[in-house]
Image (cartoon, rainbow over all chains, first blue to last red; front, side):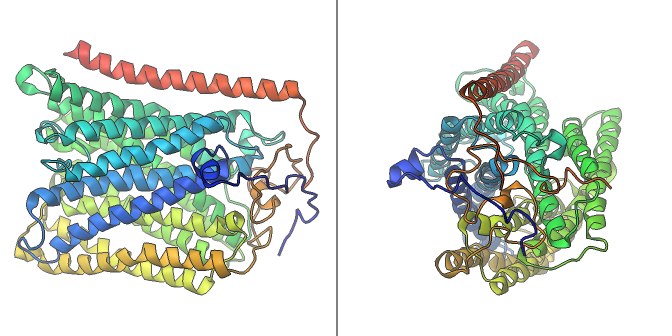
Length: 539
Length: 45
């Protein structure tokens, strides 16, 4: 099993963790504990956001209005998106970053541990504020997560609360990103050159720069919305000389890089898992790094493909169409390198590998539907239909979420010192992969047939595919509880994990015991040849 | 796992100062972007 690092003389194995609950979890400055807090918070948000999607799919199970009124339906679609994006996916990746980046680069902790604590604890307050808007007069935000004016400004009191909540989330994200950049640039162990870093750390470094560049843009946009609503400014108010389309430009200047904020760390996770279970080094490590950087750069210059139908000049449409299509090139490099890593590998299909392979296949489907949406004349047909809903759920559920689940199954033995049941892990996978396709694949057909998104009722012509989609949603709603049960059982009764829990695993995180002690790398590790996962391998 | 000798207090202090400098620089860039976008809105109006 263990191929190296069996000679560890670990002087970090002491385990001075704080004993009291408050000291350990509320005032914690330890990267592992804060990572755990992020992951638990994210899981809670996935359950809440999932319940909201349950309401949506229940109402759409058949045509007509059965369960909720249209206003509440709109609140559910808006809140589902805000909760899943800002409360589920992003904190999950930050949690993984907190746990793994210091372990992967041989650092004792994050560079700014107190700020790390603050970054996390802002989030529960932001989401309490956001979720409580559902209970105030007028209800929660109902204008869509994009908050387009003038619709979003027609809400009641909730507008102020939502904007405040978004500001708090933004501050949390920016502080988290500052911490990650400061950690990676300053705390790498001697010998851990930038081009020797694991791919997960690399993708997070680039993601953190994206966050620094675009979260302030979102903050600026919603600040201007706030002053339009409550201080009689007219940034986006046409009656006062403002321009509502300008909001869309600013929003998507944030919004498109945001998509990559939610997918680049996923690329990093998959680039860790596939080599491990193929028992081969990652093919084209440097190409992967440069492809990630290229995707990040391109994400800044394609924003208006979200708004082809607002009436922009033909030259603008052509530019944004071609620029968007360029993204397929570095993304293709990545998919090629994953497949080439598998080629002639000694592949085994443990649970994390199944999730990673499903990511490669299903995310690629989402990528292809994205290319279809990039084609201007086609987008005129697809815009604001269920085709778009299908597209971004393939990217975010079978892409981002599947990679998060893969990462949890992959690093769980390192975190807890326990293995989980492979049978139930695989059962979780096959159940999810079946129902997620039942849920989202028919939505492509609904969109192509013209069913608009964000509506509680629809033409009877769309009934069959909606019913199938809702059955898929029912299957998916069970999966978080299934995963919780698998991991809880593992914690209580799981087999003890070895230091190198997977035969082909490489990297500094596998040189510390399982579970990882509370403090690791208090003295920098000496990096031996062959110890790093990818960066010291030349092809 | 072999480890290196414990870094000197000076080296740790230098590392902390560098991390702090990086954080302040990145934070200042974030604030500048926020202000620039609002200013663009104000001046554009």
